[in-house]
Length: 466
Image 1 (cartoon, one colour):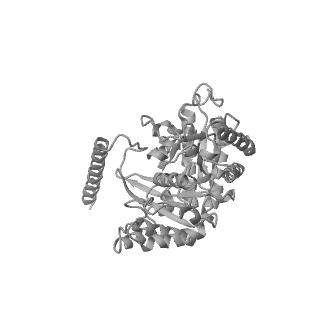
Image 2: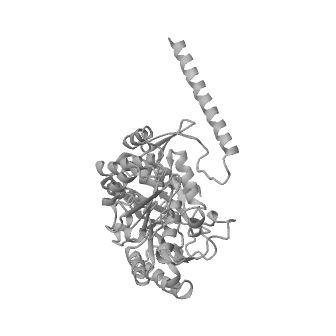
Image 3: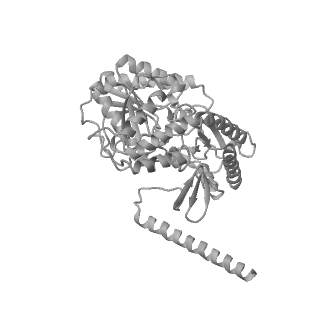
């Protein structure tokens, strides 16, 4: 019997070794044949996702605080959503939107209407990605106003397609070497203390006043109101560092747009659909969007985005001016219908707000830890869209007022790497040393605490390494 058990362990070991070898060869194949323009945080193949965990081809199981960058918000392979998609695959996979309506498209609108932050948002166009939704929003704004120019935000991320790339200002990597970009784009400072060179505890009212004053100057010096079609803003700055826009800033933008007939485009691709503890983050300010963009978590992993406006505006569009081969795909829409049901049935917003408090408590406790306190500049965010900003000895250059020569270099990327080694997938973001937390909206209390513990250990170890 002992001999048989020994042979069994040996066979199992060989199988595991063979699987690891196979995984390594797949990774090598990918590195050889997948375009270098794609970056990865782990050189591995994801073979399975379940709830808040992913499994890699080498056998590692990781707690996932990335959600595919805020996409699988209801956990990987949620059974109700996956079943809805599978059932739809046996009924209708592709009902092209320029040929006829299909049921899931219309049912999804019925589900979303009560979730809208303002009753005027009653006209929907579904596309595939956030970038495409931004392109459509720009087209709409230009059509609705008969004007060309777009005002965007410093630090904003809206996508990598051509128009979206032009209004993206979070990092130059997205547009470097691709110029000339779409013309008619003017950038406004966003009320983020670091970008403005103000202390982290600067009142949001002061940050907002500074930026709204700059908007007045921009409209006087660079793009006259009669030439300005839209102001586009993320309710929570995403790739730029997870910085919530203060309500007074958003209200100021609304007032300027109302005064001059400018469209206010609210980008909720990453911060929307429950991520911040409300259906849409713009609800915190009470501001009415003219056009709102939603994507990422909308279909919990199936490619789907929404461009939402009011019928009195979208009735100005000529039939055929909007569309796309896969726009509003039936399978993606069926998954999104199920996701909307799950949001309500499983009381997702309640969980977000409960877990958010625990996450902020854990991160603020870490911030007061004397071993690491000097290395942490800020803890911020809303709901389960949260960031920790670390200090840096070099900053963004010699004029960065918040450089700290006593802290280690590249803290964010080193902490993220250490987290992966300890079993936690987590992402950096922005040109500053920032790590972002994007756990599933239905994450358990236990898994959230586990992730926070791993993060705290990683920070302490990296700071100690120097």
